[in-house]
Amino acid sequence: MNRIHGVWPTILALAITTTNAFAQDSPLFSGPMIGHTTESSSSVWMYAPKDSTLELTFAEAAASNKKTAATFSAVPNPAGNLAGVPYTVTLKKLKPLTKYDYQVKVDGKSEAAYQGSFQTAPATAKGSKFRVAVTSCMKFGEPQDSWDLLLAENPDLHVTLGDTHYSDTTDPTKQWKHHLRYRAVPQFAAVLRSTPNYAMWDDHDYGPNNSDGTALGKENSLLGWNQVWANPNTGTDETPGAFFKFSWGEVDFFMLDGRYHRSPDDAPDDDKKRMLGDAQFAWLIEGLKNSHAKFKVIASGSTLADSKNDGWRIYTFSRHRLFDAIAEHNISGVLYMSGDIHRSRVWTHPESDRVGYPLIEVISSGVANSATLSYATVDFDTTADDPSVQVRIVHGDGEIHADKTWKLSDLTPQK
Figure (cartoon, helix red, strand yellow):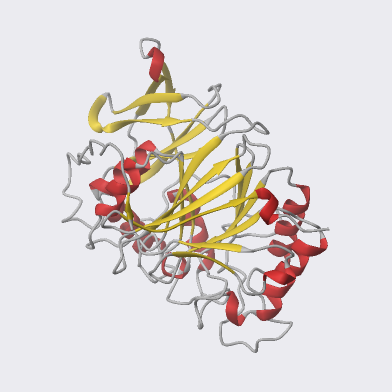
């Protein structure tokens, strides 16, 4: 096995000046976190006491003497008995593929942990090289060293696919307390403040274990989720849910909500059983058909085949409908990413003949809740005549347990 190489980052410990995050259910400060980022903008999220004044100054890393200020706006209290509220600000008129340094002040005071840097996305529809870190299954109280390894690899963005905490409830107050407690973990906080983050839930942060569209209070889970992550707008005007799309260079990411509209796992495995619901499925296929990206990533918490009790494996109609639609519309460059099962691997689905080319699944599960403490990195290169994607599975000891590369021509229907 290979071992990853790189410069280990300096991890800034999260400074909580008014409360001990590990002793209290609800820290008074959390963040900053870099969220949805484009070639010209970036969203920054923070949680602070009510009626705080938050200001962010930022500048190009190469020209830090010229700073610009932006003020956060408070979002309505997500849960009635929390001490603070989330704040967000969107930085605009940024340059593509440019690194920015920033510093947040709360009521005029700054802390070392309230500063960081991030890089904007490459220009749309232009060739680029970038690295995606993929994680899931993040648990408080477990070893967190894999976040240090991940950050040392300098990912351009971080995609996390569920079980970002284990509250196992739709009660927003309890969910928020779990989010805030975990975000006070120094290693995780360092990733949040220095890398654009995109998140999709799975069962343990949506509701109870193996929960589905019948979960009582799911609308409260959705409200809280949208406030605690700085994702793009989720769902559609007609269809609620946590699903959304974003682009990074010449790669489109379709983040699927496999819980809000899901049929129960124990429902008969027939043509009435749904993983996504018909409206979300139509949204996905329309997006794939209209995409001009080289690669199209479909990402969700549920695995395609590895889970025998809570994944696409027991949703035969939904799985086949997805595979057949990709083939019918001649959609090239599709990869699938998932989490959930507390182990990581990359493989080719045995029903790939329905798609017309190898359907690759990247499973990244257990960055802080597994025996291997593993995660995945996915490197896209769309600068070549035949663009490529390289997938590595990295364990918490630094060993690389898989390293595979595919060309776009490999993931294109053969005429």
